[in-house]
Image 1 (tube, rainbow, N blue to C red):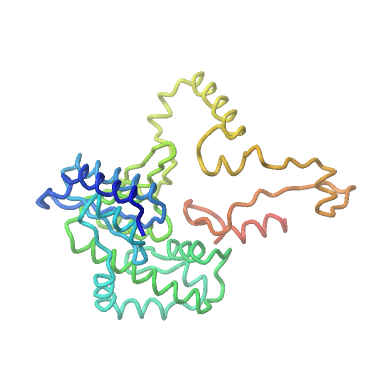
Image 2 (image 1 turned 60 degrees about the horizontal axis):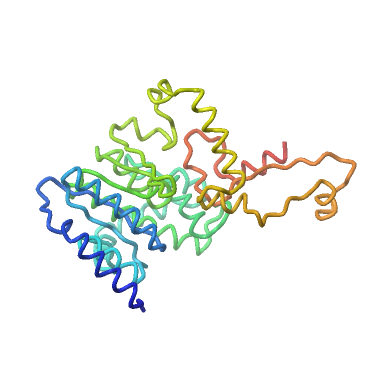
Length: 319
């Protein structure tokens, strides 16, 4: 149940953003997604999308998840009444696409099948694979158990729902908080349908990237622009890097990874403490392999050697 303060915020928000709902759709739509549980994320992504829609003279349409909470749904509607993604729309899309969904599902027997799944021209597999890892907090997909199969069906339904939107509506731009997991379906659909895509939206440093041309979509979102690099003053860069890392390693930057990694509450272990705590052989050298989070989008980076972070880590240790 929403508190009185939250209700006041919703009403104030509705008044502030009322103008976005009065736009006609003559120029087309800007589609943005709000698949978040945190109100701050919803507000930040939506605000960004609405501002871009204003600049581009497009009518904004938000798509939310099936399990959106009542509070978050109210927040979405307070910023833009043009919000889609309800159970009725989703069910109609499922019934329309039940045969291709069934064909895709039946073609997936192993984790490798999942990873290499293509639906027509769309390379769906990597996004689907990573979405399964994230949703179920697992390191690797080998055998498809009941939980994985249920999730595969759900994500395939979302893909075809998005596919119908992108291919049949006059969508000129897509704004997504990230271009991995389920969000990556929209990224892939935008790529092959000539739709401009703005992603990811980093609300910590407030950065974003625009993908306009087909070849842009093959670049990682942190790939630097060479024209920018050519114009950098290296003396200033050196000073900035020193200052940045000094702040980062002392947890003086308000970013969730930094605060977790370099918190002052962290224990700093000496070699002798490591040996004692983990029952190591003191006469042998100690090697630490810094593993990435296994379920954190292993296919976000193009050209990686391994199918997942788990296998990468295992092979590194084995070598």
